[in-house]
Image (cartoon, rainbow, N blue to C red; front, side):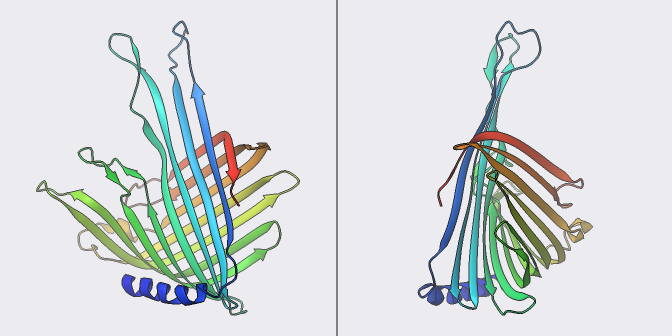
Length: 289
């Protein structure tokens, strides 16, 4: 099924791209840094720390045909936290940095414009991370990977100069790939798990004026119905997965910007509790397009 989807995607894209209108690009990059330092005479238990985050968000959209639109989105992020510690002799030292953010997210959506209340679409998504430290004995790069293929219906609910809001619903197949996974016998091999179900995605974007700021929100809910390893797993895979991403950014002065990120996710197979993270940063950002 996955191979058939990929081949169909390529067969459609190549010929129509040759005669399509120009691409519409948008891309921005940001770098934020938080630093704290204390003198040796400081009375307290506080220690120095450095946290940095580099991120980019890019989109490319093209009207391939009057009836066919393609929009691709690439989100990248990587950040680390460096903490200062005190050893047994009382000397200060810097620990090895820990990851605070690690994200690779590439998605492409083909939308067939019918002029009706809803439009059909097909989409492909690839999610991963730059560095996988889950295995203490082996550092793995670009691992694990989650591939998602979706087909269904999409509708734009709001579309104007400041606000865009669309939602889509469809059937989805996911493939989770874990390379060089350590086995009980001590050897390593690639583990693959596939499942299929129903996915709902809504995306909202609003620009604020006269201030140079914008807000983006994305809600994704996936309900698995089948799983290739259902006989070996407990019932957790039957619970819905949810990811809710929110980003508020604004220009303070020139290239200096502030951002607030809030992400909540629920994946019962990984953790039974709701997970969330919040990042407030001040740094520099630059729009390429």
